[in-house]
Each structure stands twice: as structure tokens, then as C-alpha cells.
Image (cartoon, rainbow, N blue to C red):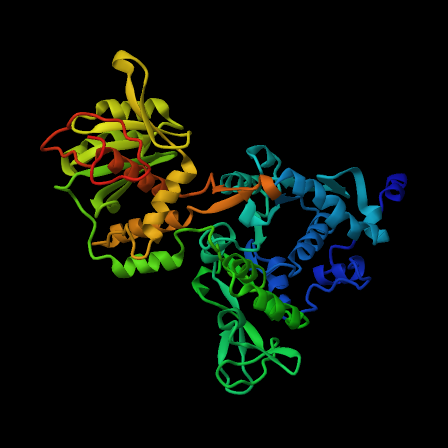
Length: 545
């Protein structure tokens, strides 16, 4: 037993605090000991980081949270004997994290170097008798089936939400602490980290002016609170002009009743030693350029901003709400198009034509896939559909069943392929069903353009009761998630709509628009006219029938 004690270096006494552990064993790149509460705004965050089971940080770039996460992971594994999984968006990022972010701290500490035992791979670190896993979540295989006491998600905005949800099962084992930490720069409003922050108690750093006692966040006042005078840049109160002290502030929760989920917004502006002159220069270059302005707001102000990558933005939805003058419908005498997005549940949108090329969604439904057949029967009776378009995938058999059951309108299964809208038939004889193919990105552009046009060519209905209010809020959330992303780089870079996000009603509305394009001119009363294939990119007054 004495020989074993000699071979395995003794770990730190469990009585050592996290802060003391950091100051004693972690050295920053510039040679200074790491003090996690060296910046005043960090004290509360650090206290809660070490004690609270669920924390979200919506942050600006280079605000120090990866360092905090590494330090706390070392402490948890080394001192408290816990197993931790650290998730990043991709395997490549995970493979780089160990050598570039984790190992330098270990190499600068004689004690930590002595504590690394056994397996020392890029994605697996053994400290004493417990483990620190580093995994990419580009696929479900990254959500490894190993129990952990804490899971950490870095760069949440880039992680596939379905894989992130699957990874949460790692902390469900009996005896696990069940801790979850999320931090990232925000990209789109109500997407990724911003959605998590919105579900938290939403703590913001409220700065008090010494001059007039006005209280506000620095990011909400920007750029009115930044001035340049005699070559110096500083923050001032927009009301009285007094110079602001960013340390004369406190964290205030917008929703204190949600204390089971802590959330912090951390912009660069609240860091006392941040270089305001560089921020000022960046803003001057970015303010008149939408894409650069969006990047600035995300990285400096910790505010989500999609630029032109979120066609249906909160501002667009606000304009739609102001202009809308109609309510949810229970029936329609006007011909409608029905769109169905298939997944774990079926999301259904029903739309009437609006002017020469617009549409008015009038009803939405979310049902279990098993209940869809009965719902479609009711829709045929009540909403006068001219055409119904339903996803061919992922439940092709069920989708074909829905198309075959239709008695009063024409049905299509839908595929995303090709470059323009085309109709065809799949199968033969009694198994034959109509199909329509469209380019996914071009088709979604046509739909989002209708809402984003000024004036809009598509609106949304007003709710008549609390249930419909919940529904329309979900529809708006899904429309905001029709966001774009860039793949590749340089000349090979392409922009396309993001997949694997909760935009189901948005996709259903897109299919309803296509259904209208196929059906316009047909009504249940008159029946279909002679059929002609549709090849136009937008529907006009004459349609498929």
C-alpha cells in the first residue's frame, strides 16, 4: 500500500476552494496566476458556476469563459473526483481543444502535470482516478454513452440541437450531480444559446451613473453611450453625459422566478480593462455595413444579430403583427393550400391566396403523426383545400397514405431536389401518387421573401384565445429559425438554410405556399379543370388547374 501511495501523487485536499485552486495551480499565457474573480462582474458568476446545476452564459467574444470552464473542470475532476464531458460543435474543434487550450495549463503547472495519469489522448484526460472527456457533437455518436456528473457545451450556437439534447442523457444516472453549463456567442435571436438564455432568469449587468443615478445595461445604450474626445474613448451616461464606471454595477435578473436556470449576458463592454478605442474603431467600420454590424453586435455586445442570415427577423415579425387585420379561421370558402411538415410530430399550415402572389396563413395544427389522417379529413371538409403538399420524408409510407386518402383536393408528396418546381408521379397503378420537387433554398427564399417584403405579401393571423396565442407564438419562433449558414470557404463557400432546427411551422408554411401555387384557381365547388404541369417559380393568378 505504501508503494502505491508513492507512485500516485496525492491530490489536493478537498478543503481547498475553487478560487484558491485556480490561483495556486493555473497560470495564464502571460505568466500571471489565474484569478477567476479578478474582474468584479465575475464574482457572482463564479460563485454560481461552482454551486448551481444549470447555467447559461450568452457572451461576447474573448470574455474568458473557456478558461473558467477548463479551470473548473480540472478542479471537479482532480479535487472532487467527478467525471466531466466537454462538448464542442465538431470533432475537429474537439481534437484541437486538448492540445491548444487544455494542455498549456497542465504544462505550466508541476502539480497538474503530475496528476495526469494513464490515458492522455486528445479527447480523453485521466486525472487521478476520474476522467475529462472532450467530444464533438457534429453527429449523435459524439453523445457518448458514458455517465458524467457535469456536461459543458461550448459554442452552443454551432451545435446541432438534437445532438445536444441527446447528450443531456449523460447526466441522468443515479448519483450524478446533473450539472449543465452552456456558453457561446449568440448568432440568431431565439436560436441556440439565445433560446437557452431566454428560458433562464436573464441576468444583466446594470450600471449606475454616478451623476444622475440612471441605471441601464451598456449594450442597450450602445452606441449612444460611447464617445471619443481628444483621442480618448470612454463610456458616458446618455442622459447626463457623466463618465461611467463599469464596476459601479450589479447583476439583475429580468425573471427572478426562474432561479432554477441561471442566465448571464456578458458583453465586452462590462470588462473594466477592455480596449474601448479598438471597439470604437470596429464600430465606425461596421455601423453602415449590415453583415459587419451584425458581427460587431454579436461579438462585442453579446446580442444576437443575424444580419441578412435570418430573413424573418424579430423586426419583420413586429411589422407583420402591426399590419395583420385578420384572425385564425375555422373554415374557408376561398380555396386554400395545405402544407404538412413531417417529423416527430406533424405540423400543418393552411393558407389562402393574398393578392396576385401572396398568401395569408389562416390556421395551424400540431398533432401526433398517428392523428394526422383524421385531421386531414376534417381539413378537407372545413377549409376547401385545392392542393395538399406533404413531406415525402422521413415517413414516406405515412405521407403516401395521406395523399391517397384525399377525396376533394389533389395531394403531393414533396422532395427537396432539382433547381425548379416540377411535378411528377411516383409509383404505378394503384400505388401511384403525385409528387412535387423543389430546390430547398430557393423555395424557402420565395416564402421568406413574402413575409419580409415591404409591404408584406404574407401576414399572420391574430389569436382569438390563449390556445391560439400559444400556437402563433410557436409559429413565430419557427419562422425566426428559418436561418441561413455558410458552408465551405473562399470560392467554394455556399449559403443555405440551416437544417436540423426547430422550424417546423416555417417548413409547413413553405409547403402551403407550394400547394397554393399548384392549386390556385381550383375550388371544391367547381372541381379541377384540365391539368397542366406547373413550371413557374412563383404562383400567379392562373395555377395548376
